[in-house]
Image 1 (cartoon, rainbow, N blue to C red):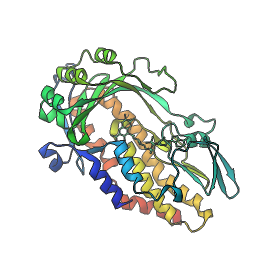
Image 2: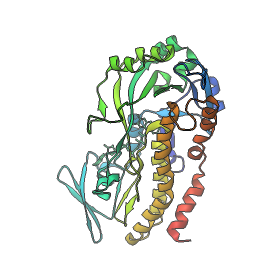
Image 3: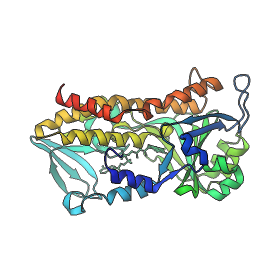
Image 4: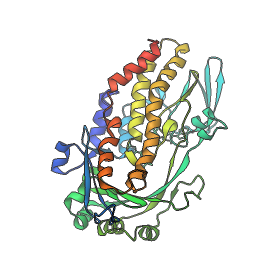
Length: 371
Ligand SMILES: Cc1cc2nc3c(=O)[nH]c(=O)nc-3n(C[C@H](O)[C@H](O)[C@H](O)COP(=O)(O)OP(=O)(O)OC[C@H]3O[C@@H](n4cnc5c(N)ncnc54)[C@H](O)[C@@H]3O)c2cc1C
């Protein structure tokens, strides 16, 4: 973020919540992992609550309230009438000789050199780019999650300071829980994942269903006391279906249409890196666009962006799904073997965290310049 805009990074830091454990910042703690239910012997003799592992990153983990951060970033934009319009819904794109004409749901249209779709997992731009192809729309990944909040003082009383206030994965068979502090530590955020037995999402395009606490408690009735305490304290328990995108063969069409962020590579949230990848996309694409001197170079810029960003971000989609399997003792070759789990956790996020962004940008610029 620093590389894109200092004020954007400052806005993040102002609104972000860091793990308050005194050691977490120094240790650069990403997360602790513990059993959420009893292991199944002989392969796993751990009991519910037992510690599995702790993973450290180059920086300590933090999170930010989406709306707060968006508001702060919006405040950095030029005045609305200068170059920004809000509340628009893209419905179609006409490609014309010298650019595109973009049509919106409110009946208005604008002419532009190109359209860059960052319109999320249900992207209309992606549907237009992949019209008639399987890759056009997201698919159900077989997992869903109950999401809810707990006031931190209640969480601390039930779980103790360390477990309540820091990032934890509670590991299990066919499910896992993720808990972490938000709102500067005032609230504990809970995401309780389960694998859907039949692998089918029966609710069409409705990916979020109203809370059903009874069903949630039933879903986790074999789990340990910490997990049950967390679930019983959750204020609401909305159900979120986990979708992701099939592989994309390209992120652009010529110099007219391009896509980034979730529109290009929506993944499951299991590695907590979807938004991070979108930020990286912005960095690379904005720098490439800064190199352009005439409209005809747009295609080269989009192609360079595609060449460096697509392999990395498609890998995120694949490995995030794989992480969901890992956390639920379903990953082939690992299952519930604690030593293999630890080894996997030690390595699996390094390629996400340890990228040299300056070098990555240089690769894109080299492709753009044809060197
Ligand atoms: C449960 C869950 C947990 C997650 N946890 C993490 C995490 O810990 N860390 C992380 O990095 N990522 C996480 N993610 C992923 C993260 O939310 C996304 O990767 C990120 O929001 C993508 O940003 P985006 O701007 O590409 O898309 P979005 O945030 O989806 O924004 C798309 C925007 O486009 C607008 N839009 C949609 N259609 C149109 C249209 N036709 N015309 C105009 N505008 C349109 C939408 O209104 C929206 O404002 C999580 C996701 C989920 C579901």
